[in-house]
Length: 379
Image 1: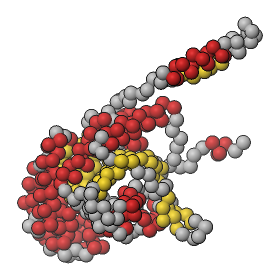
Image 2: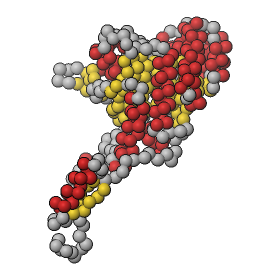
Image 3: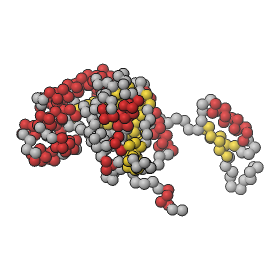
Image 4: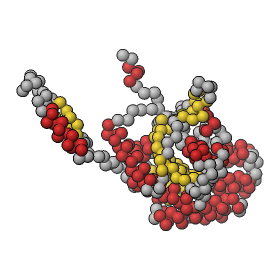
């Protein structure tokens, strides 16, 4: 037998036994919390037309997509991200709906990233999307739901970092940066690469006061004091409105009583360019990247023919599990099945007892009685 057949490709793996039982339990706890907010389940296809995840949509770069062709010659991709799929679905089935709709989902995403850095190419995500509500209260609901979901999963020591991409865009607009320069600068800022950002701005001959403002964005993080510092740094209306929105969001989170888990980061941006306003990421110990990512994407549905504001988040279940394990947090599992041994003579009697246990909602498994070496079947 070819031993290679029993191995998985790089970036994917099997999950079974107790680990998988823990994964199912964590998913159940998070989904139970999301559904308590009135979110309804939705399932979208594992693969879609390439255009759903194209560069214009602002999602995963084309080079990181798993692409293939159907028999008609259409380019298809395995989904790298749920949000564009759900936006497409909402535009298709709720084109005229003005009442906010709430979706929750769970499934696997696929990213063809050669620079793995320990990350899986197939990972499980679950999350929620609120479509049709542009308010700060909707932002607060989503952020509070993230915090409560992580608490429900057993995580205690984490922080939800919140930003607003409009703050950065307002300064770029005031500085007169073109779109290409803004996107390039965005990569430096989000990566906290101060020197790369400074070199780019000098190369583009950006005026000193705007250059200083853009470079200081990377230092605007922490408690509510960071919002005051950010407000004092700018004069354009777009950036000031972004700060006002974060202040309103914080008030809502105080109403939920979850403000102690919240911090602010005005230099936080995303590789997903469809985010238009408030964005957030949740961080904890034992994992190198955010375990939750989300934000507002008010123009994405317009790509699919429905003009509606929206906000959502997703939890990377695999990373959350790693964090729980490294922090020594146990996930309570359901009781294991009771093993009921039988012999040829006692099979009917044991089966009767097992059926009774199962009817009572208990778990039971039938096992043939093991014989000691040298015993006969009749002994």
